[in-house]
Image 1 (cartoon, rainbow, N blue to C red):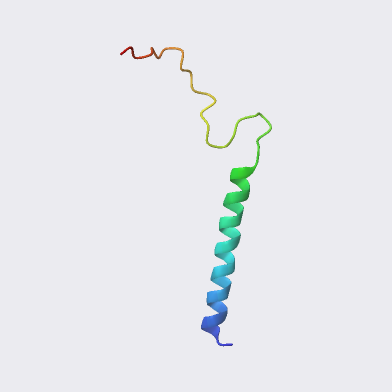
Image 2: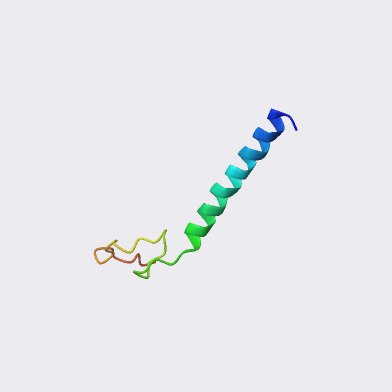
Length: 52
């Protein structure tokens, strides 16, 4: 194998590890019960519902 093929395989492996880590971290449940993308600290008490 030449150096270009080795570099392509190495970059592909690094990309797989990166994407796998992102997926793994997004599926982890945090101990405080809040998933990674929610806005648990937002206070919605001042927002009034829109009446139609």
